[in-house]
Image 1 (cartoon, rainbow, N blue to C red):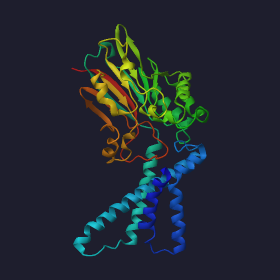
Image 2 (tube, helix red, strand yellow):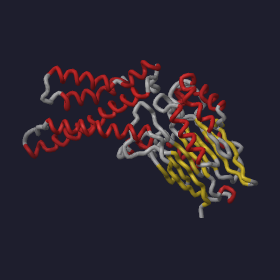
Image 3 (cartoon, helix red, strand yellow):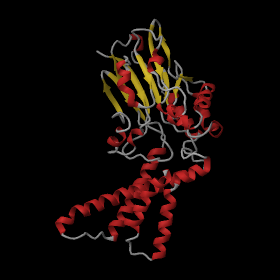
Image 4 (tube, rainbow, N blue to C red):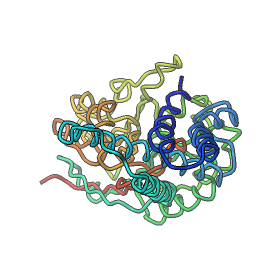
Length: 372
């Protein structure tokens, strides 16, 4: 069913864009086969690794498939808009409107070009994004405290160790007080990703590097990955917290598991458990991969929640669609009952749809300030 759904846009393109073209039947048939093959990228990923979430093939092939698959989706969208426009004009013209071949060529060229731009934007090293968050009653000792958030790294054949090394280097160059990684670090098994994940052992921050699981960790033996992250020197927060100290001042950093735990029998997110025993009157920062439970966090007194998961909606204008599955939160800063929620667009993204148009990836540095 998964692969059939992804074949539907290709069938639409074949029927509405390709087949009406004035080409010889043999050429159209060959082109239709190419389109169908491009639509089954995720099937090839499953064949290569046993999972649609980890394509174990050369990086160049993954980039090529992402370009072709993204172009196919964009072309299906463009064709749909043209068809809806023609349908809307039917009562005015009193007849169906013919679509010229030149328009079909233009739609295809536009889709191919936009897909190339979008894939390039998706796989580049993310630019730095500066965010200032004001927190009421922030102790003076934590004024100007910097947190670098990495999220949705999806280290894989598409985002390999060489890519991770550059991200780690740029993170360390910022000299952060704290580094947090808010889930979806990998796509693949511990054995398959050993080299790609290794650079994360070199992350450095004054108060350490903390990590929580995202939904993709649960696709590839979440417990094994949590042990691996610990071996790399990161502190894993699973419904638990740590206390950050500056002299006599304290701040709480809590982290919860992911909602995907429900499918594996592992512990579900439990913020009350994560905060149990935390010092009273200390500002609380929460790491939660998915943003949809932000209201619950705000009700328990969390000052700042850091999330990812949504990839910012991938394409400008699709935010409302992504919001439906994420509690209304997709990208950037939100005020949630007095709590600040920050949803990062992601340091990278899942290699099954590596496309960004108007929604840039980000290496996020958050500076804490005391709220006046």
